[in-house]
Length: 328
Image (cartoon, rainbow, N blue to C red; front, side):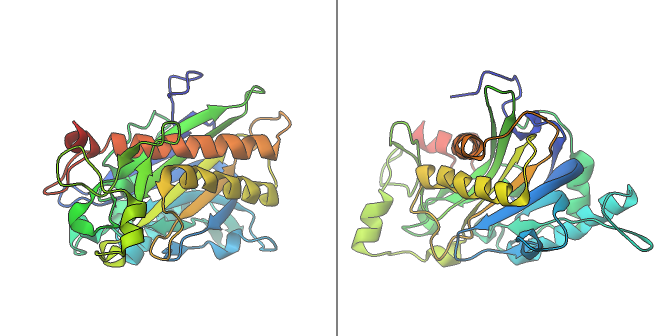
């Protein structure tokens, strides 16, 4: 259900957050950048067994740098981490970064999905594509679907890649009674199936023998995996952002709780062949007292809705149908 508090039901409803996408016109891959108008407190929680990341170690407690300037999500597996260089260049040109002698060093944590199922691995985002995503960034509502880092995403690969459906990019926002906002952006590229946590119905998963049907993931697991989920590539990546004022430890707890949004919508999740990651950002623009329990619960809800948004708005590509085309 859409949040009725704002016409913009996406992460860009959080003040100080803008998002830009680059979608490759030649192949289904791309990258998505979340830009912070001012340096933001950040944390990360990595649960998947196959992450592709950059600059996540500095988000740990005890590190020198507590604030970041952008987060990049990209296709292209570990090759796509190169796109963060373009984000850094864009930020440096504008004097945005950690101050050092002679200039600034923009802090840009990044994570990637393995989208070679659709691209064949020969087309992947690099520095120019990361720069282009920054040029595209705005506070406009996000449409979601097969764009940016979600352009080559797929879901439902437990029975093998030939049974998968299209994943995508989705976003949503939740609002506390105090007015504090917390939004989520998710790239859904999981090995498992996506379910509606309210009804328990499978929304997207391994395709059955007839259109509109699915082979339940747990039954596939129970019988033994006939496919090769690792080779077909997986990961669900999420960014949650709030205008609340949080410490890094509090932001980390919000990221941890937000992981339950993945657990309620993806089954199985956090597997050895998924690189599941949740980043948390706090801009501190809202001076209302923040409750970590409340923000974490709302973040998880926003992640749930962002995941459902991404798969429901995806479009078909080649032999891989979208949820809309498969389910009718």
